[in-house]
Image 1 (spheres, rainbow, N blue to C red):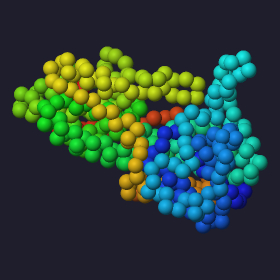
Image 2: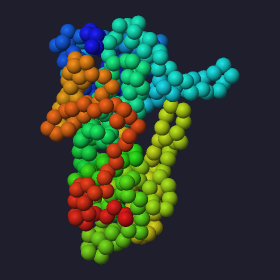
Image 3: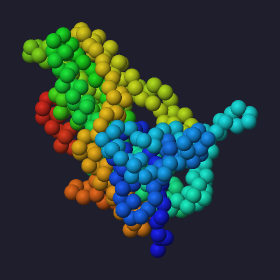
Image 4: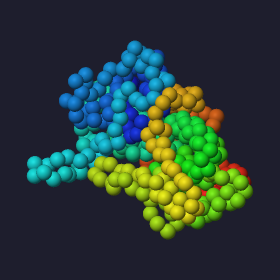
Length: 369
């Protein structure tokens, strides 16, 4: 039987996403209703490993006043990082070299010293992999799925995705008029890493004529053919949406920065590359728009806000029920729990037989295959 809970900690890791603050607020309020105290860890786990960096403290007491009016705000009041993995932490050695160290025991020691009984870890694949490792070492942990990329397995969707898709769609709506006015090809690069969910959903909703996603290696001759077919029909402009992780059938994806200790590779540049190639193949003026981090910001949609609150309160209920090593997941119409070990290290790409992809094909959109 799990010991009673008195104090819990919350942290946010990885890239920011609209809805993080809504989760934090819902966890704090639901915990307070049970008489629990809540503490927020700054910037993933950095608040524990480097407390001297934070004059106000690396771990903050979260009260109702601290979380008042934050549900509609983008970002996270706790801060976040994608370079603070305590399992593989780069540390400078006296000889100037860098070693990859496991500092996870420091996290457990801190929880024991501060009498923190459990952790609600809010993050994507990387953060939940860390959460699962801490669970296996004995820490009581519940994960909350967060990523605009929607690439976490075992949940219908993650909060942040709907907001990102909505903004990308609005941008595509705006680009139609300028592309048509100048008879141009507009290439729009969106985030998503190795999954094409944002490109697929926003591309179809925003009336794109070509969508390139990582799950389907593309042939640019097919895209150029689509553009020229539209020209022959008197529709003298085209919109191409490309996911940052898309790659040609005979080539490679674009990487801005290779992977290094404690940090995954950084993608980007495929939009510029495709724009140059399409201009050469079609003879048309082509421009690129990279939405990038614009997709991460702003107020969460009502769907993401509600999903975040449902996830946060479900995480508190899981702890109350004595659960650990689980992630809350959206399984319509309810939220349920899945094992962290079934999520950690796994990615959910776009299934090639999904009806959303078929919808695009039926609408005449080319996927470059």
